[in-house]
Length: 113
Image (cartoon, rainbow, N blue to C red; front, side, top):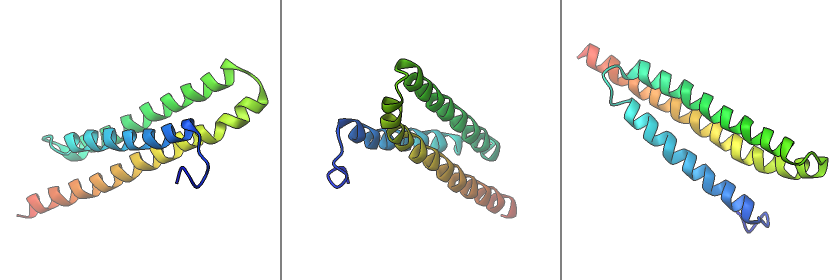
């Protein structure tokens, strides 16, 4: 994909960052579902993971806006920031939805059996 869009080093780093976010989120939700009250812990983990990610993304945007105020540089960097933010947010939300569904199903099976 990087070759198809003639990516520079920055975009390759963005793709690598998406993999890193996926690995970290997978680990967080894996640990969360192994606790005594997995439904509550998965909900809390999802909420805090989203909050931390959004705060880091806002700090990155603020760094870009205030490091050099030229509009051309900001316009050039925004696709990269969107490439960092959108896949990360989608990854967190999809993991949260899937693990929440899986944990609720497991809790219902334990109560029924």
